Length: 203
Image (cartoon, rainbow, N blue to C red; front, top):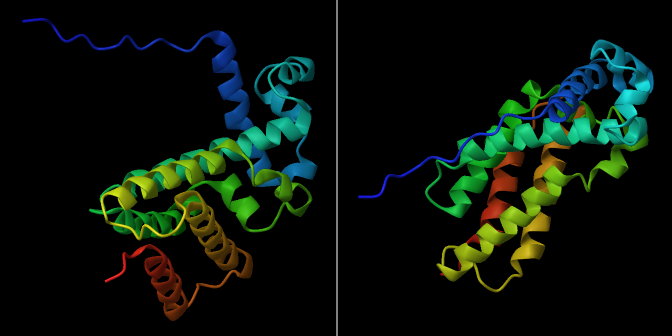
């Protein structure tokens, strides 16, 4: 009987550890002080590096900020999707995902800052960060599989549906965070009803 071997976990090299350290500091500093009041020099100094060394890992301040937002948003999305995986169907998982995003966003301060509209000068460039692109692509794949299984209506392009659902979810989060008000229950129910109508198979 052959032995089942586990893949070896390769420890990250020094360069990757340095990059991760810079990202961790950048997430915290950008979240606390914002894009304009945070300098690469401050982040590099806290990491024990020169600014020139930091620029070897990221293409300037914009590049570092986008990478930091992507890292924080990716962690938020992963946490919400892991919790949402408890659902028994794609629709259930999506509804749980939306709920978990709202409940967990305060734990990811840089993602929350951007969604709250506190970085208007750079926010427009963040809609194509890898975490959002991957979220939409993954959702499109899941919807396509659910269509084949008859769980989701099959007369809508799954890629278009994924983009629409992502837009609704982002709009809901941004509306709640930017107004500082809790979205009324009937409005939340209306959003979920709209999503359900878009997904539910006829009959």
